[in-house]
Length: 287
Ligand code: 6GU
Image 1 (cartoon, rainbow, N blue to C red):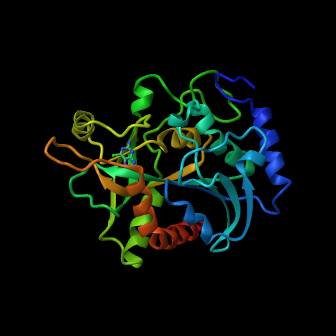
Image 2: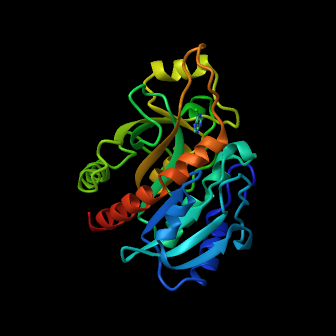
Image 3: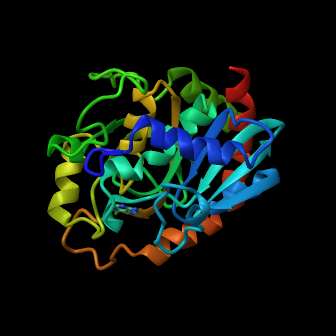
């Protein structure tokens, strides 16, 4: 494998084969649990848990609030794999390595990715604890030339120049809004544009105001590169942000963003998120 621009197809097949030897059924849906959202994987019945350190070629997740394991099993009778803990750019991994699990999911047979994250709410109408269906993203890191697909392209995963205008599946977004109504949570479910910054620091006031001007509704440190990797290999994508804090966009506000708050809001919303994501898994698998 080429360390600079990604592991080879064959190397990832080895990883996938290792995982397939541990499980009895291939997963159809992959779920990435955001910061403080690891309890999403507790909906999985008959879970087979495989710590990242046991998986050949997998990086190790280091950030607080992440368990660092794959959980295989069923939600609402649907075969799923969940990542409890993801790999962030700020941990020091190149983007392709952050996204390696997405390609492994593809090789395991995953057709649909549900990517969740904790995010700061930039849209002034958003409140802490709201959920945002991701309608679209702005790849800020990509503007600066940093992209998980940078380097030689392997056509076995996907095309050299993948389109991104339909990255977030229209049907899934429609279903997610219907399910929100059914569960009576539509008053807290929004839809908007997400962007990822490299982190690990939270943004300055000027940076957040710039992002607001270009149409960003929520800011985080993940997801965008995973979604690009998933779309490249033709996995359908649904993105969901939990708004864990209000982005501070003026100099008079005394509050400061912090990771504890991010995890607290995750805990506050864990029951609702579990219920919502369980329903989405069921409906997406039937779509
Ligand atoms: Cl305010 N910014 C970023 N980049 N990520 C976040 C956040 C803010 N709040 C939660 N995650």
